[in-house]
Image (tube, rainbow, N blue to C red; front, side):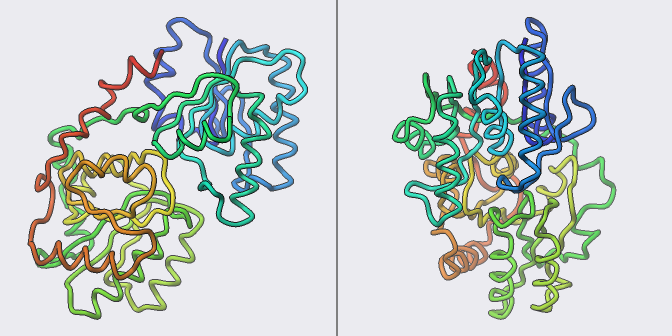
Length: 351
């Protein structure tokens, strides 16, 4: 009897559905997340240290005692910590696998918040039997700080599916036409949650500098999140309403990637970013911040990495790409990407 958990139902659906379906063939699998179509809906508060999460811990503990799971598979930092915290002091607890999609702290930690996050992982290490991480830096962090009781494994993500031929044709009007982006404009695109960690505000400010230099660049941000109002205010302050487009969540995402000329990322921290793999699968030129997860994917590939938050380096990379004139889908080949496909990692991950 297995509990499969994450902070949100959408995370389970997007990244884990094939694994849940496979486990159902031999196990009784039950889901816990913030959502309606799960066995145990839990209203996790976004902030880890919100007092409301104490009530969530108490509810989780009651579920664990009543259901007597044999194993728990944890995903996302928030759910992973709160569920393990609920196990502290339990006489009989299930075995725990924590799938780390990217620690939200560096080593050494930067600032009080990151020190607290590392402390939370140390506090629940005794409630963690196995850990799977997705990049080399997190593997080193787990081993150095002994964040679990047993095996630590490096996995190649949950696996992604290559874009299906013909997906773009399902949209009779392309995103470029919808946004009135001319063929002469260079459309920079990023897909991801609108958050401080994803750092879209850096991309907006960089775009303003590049346009002041005369480069015909525009920016499309695909996704939703808590930073939307902040980003919209910055777009207004910089007078970029006709150049920066916040288009919200979009499924399928491939028509929006196929509309792009360059894929850009300013993330401050990642695990093994799905969005970057999808952009690479489309053959888009990539310019990304040199952080864990992103450098795992691009260090042996033709993508361009720049120091995080380095505006000069990012703008140089964009100018260089425009000067070379190589743009759009199918321009770049990423041979190493095959190893991260769902078909390549599925059987190994199930073990």
